Length: 201
Image 1 (cartoon, rainbow, N blue to C red):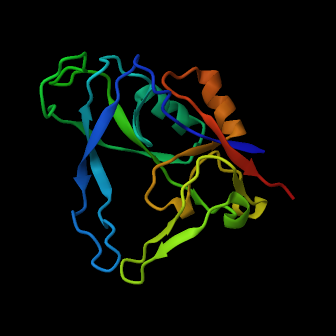
Image 2 (image 1 turned 90 degrees about the horizontal axis):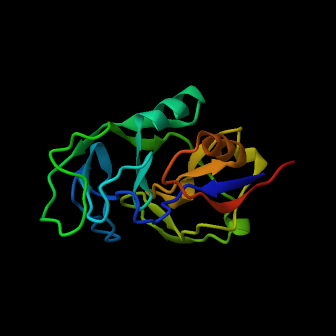
Image 3 (image 1 turned 180 degrees about the horizontal axis):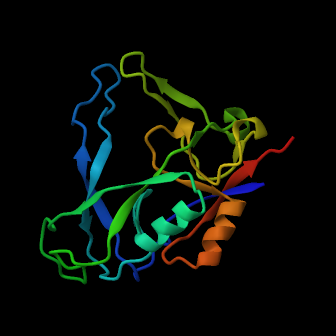
């Protein structure tokens, strides 16, 4: 069975955002030099220039916010996710191109947070450990978007997940079955790409 990375179609039709908080802290590990902060609710959203139309999915890298129609669909179909609070904040500078207006009176948006982490087969996926800090306990691996392999033993039928070895990355993956369900709902601003396969026994 194949699985897919949920991705931004990178079109100019729909608004993108920057996530500017909220962070747990702004420290870096004094042993490895990597940041130890993480995003927590509410996810602070600043709409970017370029478009003023909000899609069913909106993107900042691999971070994603969704409209209530998506939230209800994922909840009704038991996708492995919860939905965090968001806060739309004022833009940091004036716009010369279209942008979602502030104060924000658009549709309600929620932060899509996968609740399942699955481990890939590192050797078969071509992923290697790059650092293992004994102080902050963060293990970091090379990041890949394709050629990934999940063993049947590590998968229990989940439709939506993130990958354990990718640490704090919010890259979100969906199985063929999950993708078929999303495509049948015809949600806008979503561009899944083939990421890998789940081995079967």
